Image (cartoon, rainbow, N blue to C red; front, top):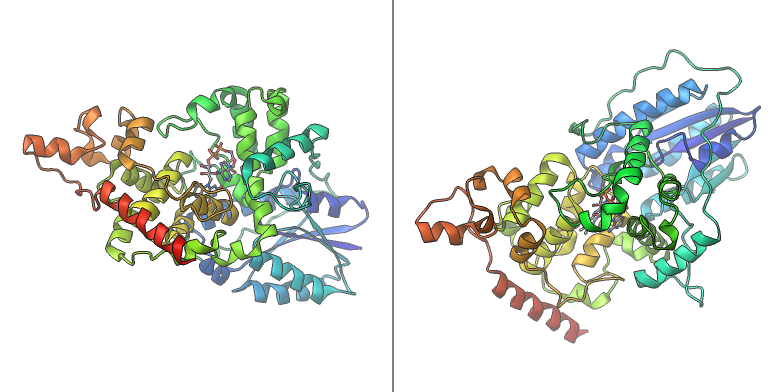
Length: 473
Ligand code: FAD
């Protein structure tokens, strides 16, 4: 028999549920397949940096599989629709008996998989797995069997489930009978723009991710609650890029966490980080319960009536980090230059776009995807809807971040700001959050934009716009 593993966002050999299942039968021939879909990636606004990281990780996966005697075939078509046809042909050509894959929860991906199953029905047995989550969507519900709309009770129920037993990690497959494959043909580059990631920040491959995970859980996780909000410190795991492509699994994170910090499930050291992993699951579970979230719809219907500003100059200034609000600008430049942005700053910059510039959150959501090496539809959409107060577990719309005081609070000495905005290097600590106020007092000139909006006035306008939308509902 021949088993096919269709890799998508699960580019690893350890704890890969579909791969482990495909390899269980020792006598089966196991093949791997990855299908690049550049046009679809374009539609989904995949960042060229993520495309480059994907390619590097795919190469590492191909090598790791070859060592175990499993060839990884790579194909390229334009869209998901074409990938259905590609799978069909591949199965026929290689006489595949069973197809193994890990679920993706976004709507287009889900529909593609249903279509594949439909096309193969009767010829190839298809098996899907809930692999990119700690617990399967639909398995953590209220007493009425419904998905939670608020995070805290979801998280409590989630932890109770984990306390009953942890989801197990699957072993990496052993080498197949024929032994390692040599040589491995080098991968062709995808027909998609690629932009190299800094390999010191994001080295490719499972081993690099696992080493980082171990180090974080041993050395850093206990201090995470105190450190995680300060963008200038290396206080968070920075594992999101590997998690987004499935080079690392959330179960691996959980197991390493409880091995190093045995009290994490009972609220001891590590509990706060565990909560972030649960947020990740929460947004995936939400996508499954409310497919409209994949269709650019807000969760709270009336927020679609907000009259957003179509101000392209403001949008451009935000994208380029030229708003005149230093913490916002430094954050945007961090993302534009590295493909990653600190979580506190994602909240500040998203809030600024929506609540200070009154620009539709979906424009920001898409721009983030074009830049992030860790772009992940569920987390990004969830984060944006949270910031825009349009989502399930949203900040109420009248809670609006003040970008200046946020900067003062989380980058008090301006270290982060000065790192990313060299034009403000000479400004003293206290003044760096409002450089123009400082410059004007001295009659100094600055090579830095003046604030493009006045926060107080912008705040009032936003409140009025949200209130008007709510009333029309
Ligand atoms: P850590 O703090 O070490 O957390 C560990 C892991 O938990 C992360 O790697 C991530 O997988 C998960 N996680 C942490 N916080 C969240 C969260 N709020 N929601 C969901 N998962 C979380 N995360 C992405 O992975 N991809 C995105 O495209 C993305 N877009 C975002 C957009 C906005 C507007 C906001 C507010 C948040 C977004 N996040 C996104 C969530 C979060 O900012 C990042 O996961 C985090 O900054 C990654 O850094 P880390 O790996 O050091 O996180």
